[in-house]
Structures are given as structure tokens and as C-alpha cells.
Length: 465
Image (tube, rainbow, N blue to C red; front, side, top):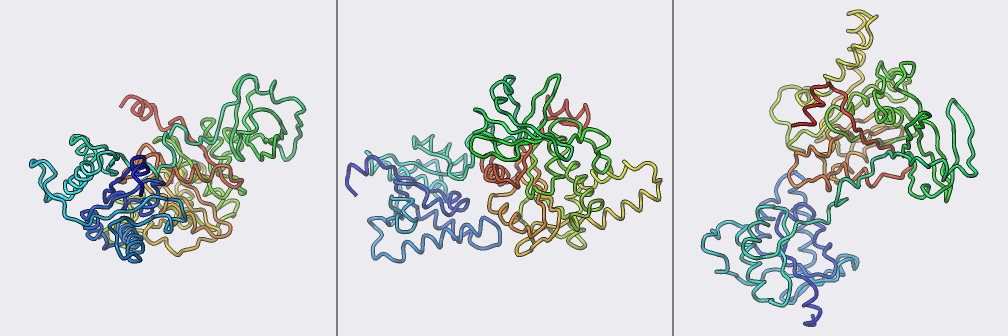
């Protein structure tokens, strides 16, 4: 490689956790070169056994490396990445081909793999003084250690869907006060099936998405949903008012604007995929279960409800709990039990016998499944609820959503500020990933719930603690 080009492109040294997090990271550094220390290969080898996501990724990274290295006679000059990445990466891959010793301070024990990798970065920085050598690691402590040694270190950002979660699609927007002045020109309006339809043109139309909710508060409030956007025209429909007891869903009514929007997407048979985001106590699980029971038992649109949630630690063995899959999942399903208690209380006239009968009927229609056994399944005419979905990686999310067969509705619930899985952040969570990728699809609905409705104690605690 010519000296001039070498001075401009960077040399990234990869830590093992980057490859185990995303094996395709090898092809994501564009025109820059990447360097894989021998300690990284050693750690990949240690983690290759097992059925976890990390082990699978370690094996895939090793396969990629094998494919690139095995076709060359010499790897001293680096392996060009372009042929292996469909020209997405134009740099080279370098593997450590010589022993590197004595470069790290004596206070750092070389028995630790992290310190060996830091030694490699120090060595490269000294041997390529005109070139920027950067350590890439998902481990915060490793990055701090690198900086204390005067080495540049970065997180691996390529897996992030969004840099700032404030930019995440909210599913609803407030219309400006002058909306009708700017968009009312040549507006068409008609009524059908108890709803009012509007066809509008104007500057906001370009940024509207199908199934996005729009609202305007005031003396004549407007709550509507965008039906479709065609060129410079958008069609909107007023939403059904689920806050009125006449429209209750399994005895539940919406307590605020966002809950009303959520029930509109949950009860719409045209919408196949729903994501509900919100803090604790905003009613995600209760609204979803109420909508599910109403559509399974009353409307008979779906044959049964399947509820699954991520058992943190994710994807690990459920452990030695006695009983069937269903019984093993019981400890994780406290949220389901609590919500069923609320839903069963709504029928006061039935008496104890009636309530017990309802409870048995409801239980028979709700199946609780573990995520571990989802591969290869197909759900027909089911209402699938994935709770605590923020703990899933984008790959696990894909595995689950692709289980849906004809007539199945999938609902993902979660709170992205409550992630328990290591290396997953708000920006790279599977839930953020699907919200961002599904927005604008005509059969997708998304609502971010804002207000907690649990109790004044819970609301105050969420605010001050």
C-alpha cells in the first residue's frame, strides 16, 4: 500500500468482544485496515463451544477468518477485504504474525489477555508513528486502560440503530396550532363506518408515516391516524374512543391519550405487528392482554394467546425448576398473573363461581412459552406477545418475529431504559431495531406510552428515585 494512503487510513485493532458481538464487524471498517492480535484468536477459541449467541458469533467470526486466510500463501502483507465483503470494505486484514513482548508497563500482568492486546496496540503505535492506531472494544474498562496508556480507544458503533434514542420514532406527534390553516386548503372530508376521513395536502405530509397517530388538543380536540401517504397527499381517519366505557376492551378503558392510541393498534386486525414502548406502569401488558382476550374469546379472530418473555440471563437454560415448560416459566410470569387478576375482577356480577369459570377459560387460552424452543416453529392464527423485548438482540428478535404464520399478530412490549443484557444498549437493543426498521410499513403500529397509571406512589417513585 502506498505511504500516502497508509497515513490517511486508520489501523483498527479488534478486541475479542467486538467479534463475538458482531462477526461481520470484520467488513464494517470501510477503507481502514484492521488488525487481529493472536490473543483475540485465543479468546475466540475459548468461547467457541456452547449454544449461546456469543458462542455462535465466535464460531462465525472464526469461519470468516478461515475463509480469508486459507486462500493466501502469505499473510504478512495483509488480506484484502474487498473480495470477501462485496466491496463494502476496501482495507486489509492483518493478523499478528510475530511475538510482541515487553511493551506494556510492568504493573500490568501479561497473563491477562486484555493486557496482551494493549501490548500489541502499543507496539503498533510505536512502529507506525505516522498512522492512527485505534483499539476497538465493547469493554469500557479496557478502553479506560488504553487511554491511561495514551492510546486512542473507541466503542464499536456500527451495531447501533440510532446514536440518540430521543430520535426514536414515537408513533405519535402533536400537530402545530396552525395545522388547519396550512393544510386545510383543498381538504376533502367524508364520513364512513362511524369515522371521519380527511385528505390533506401541505408541508407536513412528506414527514408523515402510515399508521402514525396525530393529535391536537384544544376546545375541539382531534385524535387521528394516518392511513396512507401518496405523493403530496395524506389520508387520515379519526380514531375510536376507547376511553369511553361503551367501547371497553374486556372491561378495560384507556386512561390517557397514548393508551387510547395503543388500543387502536392492538384492536385493528389489519395491523400484524405492534410495538409498545414505555416506562414501568404505563399499562403495556394490561392493554395487550385485554385486547388479546377480547379478540380470542369474543371476536374469535385468533385461536389462542402465546406469551413469552426473555428470561434474563437471556437464552440460557431455564435451570432445574420442576415441571413442564409451562411450569418452569411460571416464576418469570408474575406480570401475567398480576394482569389477569385485574382483568378477572372487572366482572363483578358473575359472582365467585362465574369468576372461577372465566379464569379457567382464560387460562386455557393463554400458553406461556420459553424463547429457547422457538426456532423452527410456525404460529398460525395466534396472538403472540413478547414481553421484556428490550433484552433481545436484533438477531433474536428476527428469529421470533419470523415465527409468525398466516393470521398471527405479534406484539412486542418493553422499556428500553431497563436493559439487563450485557453489551446491549438502548441504541443497539432488538426492540429499538424493530421500531426503527418497521416504521412506515402499512401493517405496523407503534406507540410510546408516556404516563404511568399504576398509582400515585409508583408515579412519584418513578419521578424522584
